[in-house]
Length: 468
Ligand code: FAD
Image (cartoon, rainbow, N blue to C red; front, side):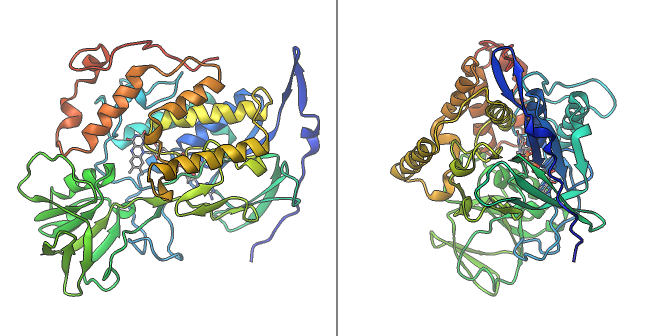
């Protein structure tokens, strides 16, 4: 049992409206959950708006998923709810999948910096991203707002029906529990930690080793083995390439076929139909193989084990609902918000835009629609998803929107539309990722491309900035 200290309701924020010229600006006491990329930029934006910010981080450093951890979980398939959870899904050889110009913040670009340990490649290794985020946290001063080693275990309204008083309860490494009341909570706990396994008959009795990509680190354990990889998203393709360095054969099973450069030890298949106890895997097209291992690159689940909203916010079939514009539950807005829920976009840009939007809504500079209008908007969005035949679990996938969502945020913030080159660079990168080109990241001359050469996306407003 943990000792629960008394709740301290700091009433300093009662006088939270300050007058700046003719505009009343609200300053709130906000808790940010997580000091990964999203939490860092959220804290920066909130502080810029004058809010009082505390960032809770369960780990000992900033960077979230970019903090490589060589350990794997006790249950590498991620099914055991009692396993010790390791936050990061990084594998040792990982290089970024978006080039530098679209990984970074508007006023803090992800430039290659000369110096010891620098990785100047346009698609550097994961260590460079961590260094970038550490630099950002230090230079922006956000690192001083972070309470490290504080795992948030409960977020709940202090009083049912009152939305601007949230109890944030945490546990420190030593196991001590404590709590504090905040007016606003911004959830930035990441979405790549809770594995989703592929389902197929015979999965639980199949004799080989099964892991989720969350627990993939290095190819050596697969030396001379026959490995099946499920899923051909960025992780599936990337891990397939990595495993090929050691494995005898790699078999990629997926719903969609990908354009691969021919590779003698790599095979493509339809999804798995079923697995048999003796190690046989039968694919939906009737072909079969005997394999030693399966790596599930089948995605992740949104997971907020600490959030108690009395069923106002739920995760159903990987849809966090209901969320207005993927950020605010209408009934709890603007006091509870989520950053970085959408995917298939330029992640850093998304988190920065959403964070700025949240910060300005909290300060009263931008108004949200009424609860009823937000709810109708959410319902209309769900209907559109259904109309195009997407399953519910794709609710937060932005491809449907083709940057409409980001441009909508940009419009709300009073900024000029996103430049085309950013969007083109993202789509070019995505094509590169989902083809099996071993050297694609090194053969794309990003600098030349930026200048509009080599099939480049043009150089409109290269100096775009989100400064207001
Ligand atoms: P995270 O980085 O996951 O950070 C969440 C933080 O919250 C963590 O520090 C965690 O410890 C903390 N936390 C969680 N729960 C609690 C709690 N209860 N209490 C306190 N703290 C908590 N994006 C790109 O732009 N380019 C890429 O090349 C790229 N490659 C990727 C490769 C992989 C394998 C993965 C998994 C993701 C990749 N991404 C990439 C996306 C990446 O997730 C984002 O770039 C970004 O790091 C997400 O940041 P985040 O802050 O939203 O989440």
